[in-house]
Amino acid sequence: MTPGDRHFVRFKPYQRAMHLVLFTSFLGLAATGLPLMFSHRPWAGTLARGLGGIQAAGVLHRIFAVMLLTLFAGHVAELAWRLVRRREHGVLWGPSSMVPQPHDAAQMWQHILWFVGKAERPHFDRYTYWEKFDYWAVVWGMVIIGGSGLLLWFPEFFAAVFPGWIYNVALILHGEEALLATGFIFTIHFFNSHFRPEKFPMDMVMFTGQVTEQELRRERPAEYERMSRDGTLDTRASPPAPGWLSLAGRVVGGAAVALGLVLLVLILVGTL
Amino acid sequence: MSARFVLAVGALLVCLVAGPAPAVAQTAAAAQTPAAPADDDCLACHGDSSATRANGSSVAVAADVIAKSVHGPLTCVSCHAGLAKTTEWPHPETVEAAACSTCHGQEGRNYDDSVHGRAVAKSGLAVAPRCSTCHGTHSIQRPSNPASSVHRASIVGTCTKCHEGIAPLYAKSVHAQPLGPDKSAAAVCSDCHTAHRIQRGDTDAWRLSVIDECGTCHLQRISSYRDNFHGQKTTLGSTRTATCSSCHDHHVILPASDPASTVAPQNLVATCRSCHPQASAAFVKYDPHADKHDRARSAPVYWTYRSMQVLLLGVFAFFGAHTLLWFPRSYRARRERRSAAAAKEDRSS
Image (cartoon, rainbow over the protein chains, first blue to last red):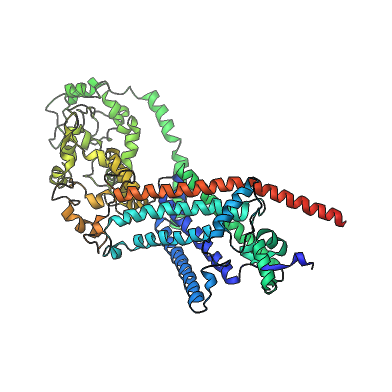
């Protein structure tokens, strides 16, 4: 194997598993929730009947919600553990942190200049600014949609604390934020991660966990150089992903993207 | 062999044998029997005001009443079609019911499918109303004619002849108040229950479909109901969710300003508790008719919606532009990469 053809681990199995649970519950929530939001559209009735009726769709929606909330709680617990017990301050700052940092703003501007041919492509590190945006959009979405969803799930319980009009607000927040989240994932995230010509039709990294050396040098030169310098590059080297994993990734990922696009069409039909 | 199969085969055989028979009979009748009786033939007996059945009940027909009715231009046998072919005079006391649906087909089909029609046809309920129960017989007028038993001003009286218990409840309701240029009641029975497709009030299908009946007048209320949780769920067929009458009651529908109303502020907790047993004074501050476009009615909802619109617009505008700029650049990058790889291969080969 020539040096440029080596493979490196970008995402560990548990991280890929989290993404799998994340998009499964996300798609499930979207498919079971959108009929209610677009109840006045003919497709909403068809979809609700296909899910076993609106009552069954509601039960499924709550099951997916518990799945996603559990995942989110698990992620927060993991971060807390890494920060407090293992004293990994890199969680909060530095190249492996998801926290937005000044260089993210600078790189975003340089990236836009690169789009129009006025600058070099930025030397991205492990996480780019648009990936951080995706990440924080999920956190924000979890708080807004998860919070309003819990209010709507247990209205009588929360009425001990909140006045009833909070449910009117929660219903608007829940729906509009869901439109933002689904609309964003099914267009912007799909483009950034999968559909842009350099990645088309699909970036397999979140399924196989791996990138090739060429990809790593081209896409994340700062990370490549940093890991070469401090010697961590070799510890990340890995044999190529097995064929079955790539195939499974293509099938599952392809199905998820296809479902997302179908839901996107329904949203557009419903909104326009 | 199941009993059902035997029945089906039997029915099929009967159809095959009997099918062509009426046509044959009709042709024969046309050829052999005298013409159908004219109105004068009928009135020869029925025009006598003292004409009675064997049991003494009157069979007198007032020709002038029919002449003034909407059916004035018709002949007797137009409706009493069964007598058109009768050869035996005087005809038997029991005759076929008037054939209203020959002309009023849609109304007939709607009626057949209604609780009234099914009570007659399926349950054999003798007291269930037929056409004439509501519309009268020889004196039938158009519904727009004030003399009609189904004119807006009379329809409540017509229905409550049987539905006696509803009369005092309805009389209290806001729907019984006069409204509009003709000062008739705001809503009469048929406005909500339809004229002919009347359904049982306790079926799920009716509970869901009556929402739209309310909505034909309460346009803004139906739109805000459909825009909120209860209405979204019932639109998709949920039968476990509040419809109009769950909160506003039926028949005794009163405005919120009336202390006896189920939606009067002091009664809301009790009303909501019929579905939400733990409902509290805070809980009932929920507005099932909140309107995100109406700042005066629903300020928190209005401002939440506006803020979310700004957020959505901002995010999609920024990332939309970002994507549109990125696409051509990424496309060029892909081509550059491919041609670089091809050049490298050329050099190495």
